[in-house]
Image 1 (cartoon, rainbow, N blue to C red):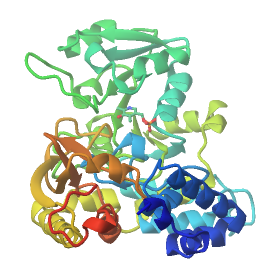
Image 2: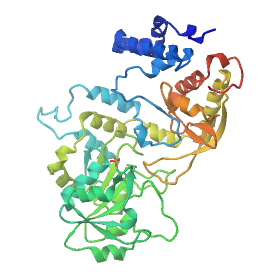
Image 3: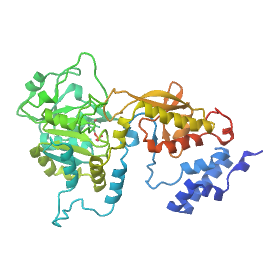
Image 4: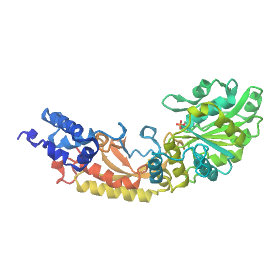
Length: 441
Ligand SMILES: *Cc1c(COP(=O)(O)O)cnc(C)c1O
């Protein structure tokens, strides 16, 4: 029988709940074009007839202008390519509320113009009592840019050679610093630096001493670095880039620097990202001495780096709301992860997918805590499922290890398990569904 006779009719495809929802949102004409395209591909035998609905779903217009939600089953908690930290429900709600007109720069008591994002600043100072003042910019790189420009343009920033970090594809902190008109004064060697190196280099040209957390690599062996506690005693302002935005120490990440600790140790200014371990929206934090933060806030460049109201709203809810998905993932035990993996695998097997489970190790990712391995669990599928799952709707990003596709649950919110299970079950071909243990293609 010609398989093409099984190509579903347009109305049948349009009545699929996922596709019907898109019709509601984007109109029948736009969605119909996508259906017709999938049917045409099936007639040309480019895809199997039973894939017309999946193919249509994969190509539906999206409300987000092309950014599609993805399930993060990579076991990498903060995946820069996947938008780093997922926002909490409270933060999402705050985004919606701020999307209209809101009091972002108005004092409702007096009716006068107020300081932009004053509630966020209060939330930050409550969370980090060691800071005298706080300012928020667009991201961590913007925070460094503002600090370098306002405190060291035309002068020197002192930085240990072992802390000349490349954060992600081509983003090099030394290059960013130099682009502001500051000069780098490198001290020490790749593996070692002493307090005496800093002391010898300090002079009239010093804008500030910078300590950067190597957030995506570790140097081991014959090494030494100087802690903020000692650098704080030098005769120059100390700026500490902690990277991940932990506000206080985390018991599972003992080597990860935190804002409170850095300020207590003597930092005059702490710089951090908000969408890494802080678990919030993309933004950059500047926390520290009032005189310094005020100088940054008043610098002309501050206006170019300011965050929008949506970011401020989400950040406030992140700081003052319930634990973020990132914080919850860090609380999750391997026992809980295993139980989730078992439930998903069992349901997948019932649909004919060859699924087992395994213990795995997850990591934080480029967002911080380099080298830290966290016990996790995964659903194990045949390797080729990895590509198939990535093409699904929603796409599921997995990792391939030793010939297996690992669906690691560490970075995935438990609320998404049902959706993940459904996606894995759907990846079993209809004809195989009666055969236990069939593979997922
Ligand atoms: C991530 C990171 C940055 C850059 O922050 P973005 O928010 O990505 O701009 C700067 N410094 C360190 C140490 C980092 O880990």
